[in-house]
Length: 173
Image (cartoon, rainbow, N blue to C red):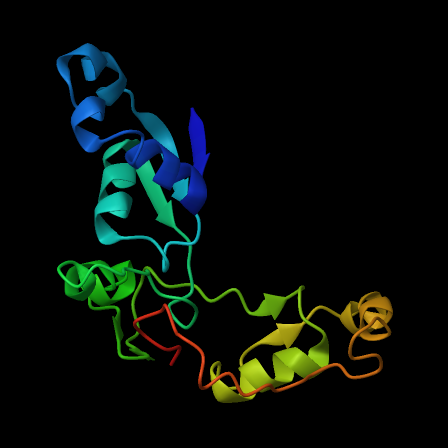
């Protein structure tokens, strides 16, 4: 068996209506369900207890995929902010404030297929130490997007949002 839980699916699973119901006597059989492999996507944005819960469902292998240089877990409650905004990479001491230490568990996926090369160049220079590569046809594939409203012909635009309310408790490193 293989289960692939996205971040939103796991939130639905964990917060449906409460943890107490998941672990109740009536659901004892479902709690015992386990899978050969569990793959957890967007691991850097998930709360550590969510990842631990998903890992408990793996018989053989657990894979957490995520980028600690992207959005961290979001918590608005003052009581839980300190604990809940810590991502799994910091919790395992793999990443310390944007300074990852070499670890056997880490593998960098170094080819990106989403952003126009002009946009990825910014991320690559400022966050990824020039290790990120663009998929070869990306510029041609994104040409139609560049020509759309509202910033026709401009690939990359910086807009000052400094006076807006920020929900994330940690910035990217």
